[in-house]
Length: 330
Image: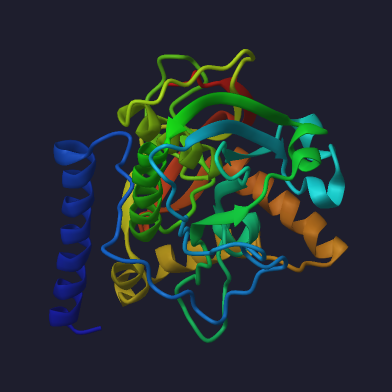
């Protein structure tokens, strides 16, 4: 490399270091705010779902209007993830899916609204490593689904189906418009909540954005509209935590994977995510578990993708934890 090229390379590295230091120390807000978009883009045709998204409902979250004279009952819904396939298996690990049900007193019609991954949880948690593209490829959109009916057995058999309040027709219609606006601007699913440690006073670095967070946002909106919500049981929800020291901002696709000077970082990110790739053989999966243990536990390193940008997490014990904790109704 020429002297001029070396100087340019050095200047680029120094610039990125200064930017990262500035972001992490001068302006950084914790938890990092979830970044919304102006409008939802179409999903890439490469992304495929094992089970179709919103097969019997409106995948854009559109909800019919109600008469103001109507009284709409509100139901808290919760069931084990993939209950339709595995029954209560994941419920025993407290890995639950959340939704909200509504029932019209005038028409007798029931409705369910939920927010979940377009292409299943694995695709939202880890990307695809494609030979033809150097940057990892993400299929991490989530969206609202509205459909007619409440599948009583699906929710009540191994989970929760509980009336928690009532709305007027106008309150319901205002909520319906809010759901569409929320769905149009909040487009990607985030599995992890990242904290400094398990204590109650820990610093939260990143918040998850998943089915339960949609339920919480909707409950808060309903109370803003004047609804009174209450539950006779403890309102617990699933949280999946990573524990780390203060995260370091790394950059986005173009700043990392488009810069020759950062090829080592780019390669390390690709190698890290390759460990968590889909469709592995049993032998490959066993090897990948060992590689993941080495990277996350022994090397105490994790790469997080949040707001279309990469962060490095210096991992701390207990590294990862699944909890089922109470979040009171607003």
